[in-house]
Amino acid sequence: DAGVTQSPTHLIKTRGQHVTLRCSPISGHKSVSWYQQVLGQGPQFIFQYYEKEERGRGNFPDRFSARQFPNYSSELNVNALLLGDSALYLCASSLGVVAVTDTQYFGPGTRLTVL
Amino acid sequence: AQKITQTQPGMFVQEKEAVTLDCTYDTSDPSYGLFWYKQPSSGEMIFLIYQGSYDQQNATEGRYSLNFQKARKSANLVISASQLGDSAMYFCAMRLGNRDDKIIFGKGTRLHILP
Image (cartoon, rainbow over the protein chains, first blue to last red):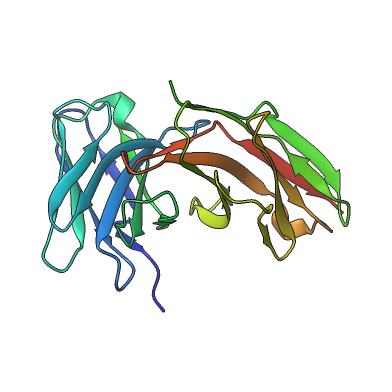
């Protein structure tokens, strides 16, 4: 069975540019979450989407936005890139059950470098 | 505030020995789930093991077991018979029950298995 897939694998942008990251969840999973992981830290929650609706949002500026499509895939958009946005962006999928047992499974990540 | 603390930035262990990675958590929510993830240098977060706050037994998955001490708010990961392939970052994480879908991660422990 295919796991969570993300594209692209690596991306280099310059300050002020816009970027779109893509994620496809595990088949049967309806929820997608996005995390930012800067070097040396644990992942930080950005967004969660379930059935195309935003279910949760972390402490990130409005430059960050996301959406989920009818096939449950998702995009994360970041506008006006800053040097501090350089990080590994991880996508996680889960069934979407609101319960502590709903395990999130992660993709390989997109490594974004902002110059 | 909810928080995960991993006090060991790095550990060196001889191959075939058992290793314990420490994790303490802080929450006033009675319902929560605790997770451990492994992150190799490739970046992908690999789910290892889950423990629910109401579970009576400690969780086990193959060579991984979770030493759950609820009163002390600790959830240490034990890896038995360590292998070279166990060298990676290990993250302890928590999800709160029925109210929030995000996972809160600790800062991680880098484990080095020595031949």
